Length: 155
Length: 155
Image (cartoon, rainbow over all chains, first blue to last red; front, side, top):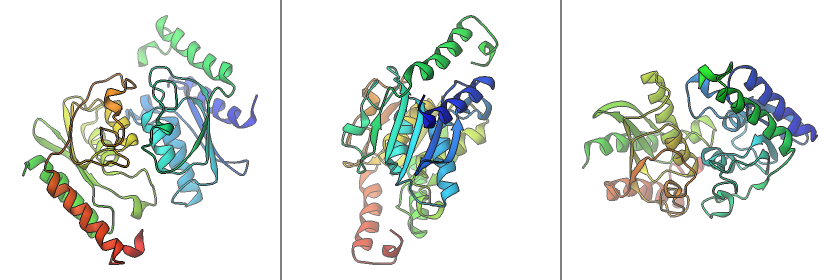
């Protein structure tokens, strides 16, 4: 498995353990981990607390920079419209995501914002990176919810 | 002028005074102001610190709620992709914006995300509310920058 995506998947596993939808993200610069985060919407009660947005904000703070040019983001699930917008505003060089999200994905799954012309910065986006592993943790989580399992009460 | 948009415009004026791109936003519930904010990208060094996202987060915190159902957002400029995504994730009932943004607007100006099918919640969006006033403050700001005026050094 890609070692960078592995860092994002580790975050997704932490999310799962905390009853959060298991999505994780990690920002790298020159191969070095700058910041990592996972979905926190349940614990914070903030529906915008997505893994990507949290990882981006942490990376900006860590680097003390006004953008993330020269950085790469790895995320286990295709970014939504909000996160795809944030990725471009921060001028990330490249984004690699795992599972496609046919419902809410904004990088080709549902809509394809990077090619829509609404961004003035070109971030390269690559999907299906270690997709089986990234998808499996989400499937397991939602299967558990449907069964009324341990995460069922939270969502 | 619409009194709700006036609250958003007041925020845009505060932004202008602080050398920020003059965009303001305000969240209302049953006609009562819940939270207001303006663009803070320069001062925070965070390119995601848009007026809408800040107002939304402040409103969620103020209400102690997990979403903004029953609330309306007024913003002086058409929301970008990131903010349009956040608006839908928070389930705002309605959004009213002032000036269209042909370059980065995601509610019809550049792309039209609310009709794209990537959101599972329907937020009504209305543009061109008090557009002349909302547009004037932006034009004045950027005219000043082109002239190398007081805000020129900041951007």
